[in-house]
Amino acid sequence: MTIRKWLINVGSRLVAKRHLARVQEIPDVRRSFHRMAQLGFHTPPLSLFLEDTLAERPALWVSSGVKSREKVIYYIHGGGYVAGSPETHKNMLAALSQLCGIQACLIDYRLAPEHAFPAAIDDVLAGYLALLERGYAPENIIIGGDSAGGGAVLVLLSELCKRKIAPRAAFALSPLTDLTLSGESLRSNAKSEAMLPVERIDELRDMYLQGADPADPRASPLFVDFPHCPPVLLQASDSEILRDDTCRMAAVLEAQGVEVETYIWSDLPHVWQIFHGWLPDADLALLQVAQFIKGLSRT
Image (cartoon, rainbow, N blue to C red; front, side):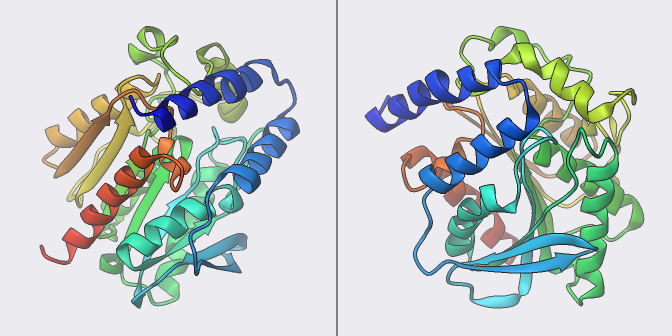
């Protein structure tokens, strides 16, 4: 293990995981996430951030060294459906934009508990449809997300496949795909997980669903169909509690004939890609996503 990986794991365990285990108020969660993004996440040089409105929701366009404006990465941020924003994830998308030469658009979807399920999913779908209305062709859109946002991306992907307006491809980083919480890694990786306290996940799930069925396909993409689905890339860490959400999601997609690239990295915190610029494994993981995206133009 490199010294930087060790430091990120130890820091995540001692600071983020302990804080998330203790914090009681959602506004405190949101403030700490934004503070960490402002102080700790690397901004690539020549990054451009432009505020916008998409489907009556705030949005942020992110670019760095973009070669073409015809294509876009439509990105759904993570945060357990209760926290996070385009601001917390803009630097990671700037890094990805720099690597693949494509701009990104991040929608600020409504958060729980103020806006319960399926508000976030409704906003994410409306944002994609708004991009189509602006003239972006489905084949020029790549959708992506992390954690809860990764789950939302897969829900969105299923809906778009059914409507026959699927994007060119999709990627999900450590996605939350099963709100029935039946994955074995929720238990087996409770101690090895460096970021998320497993004892709070039921509370988080209930705050979002507010009585809705956790097996609802709009909540848990593990239980949906993907007709005529484009290629999908999935990344997760072998030590995180959501490892099995990724592995089982890959199996579901493969069983339906979807072309899936699944990469399970070793001993890294949940959504480690956000530590790009500090952690070599994060840079390599984003490069893997960028290579996946660039490879689409050759197929």
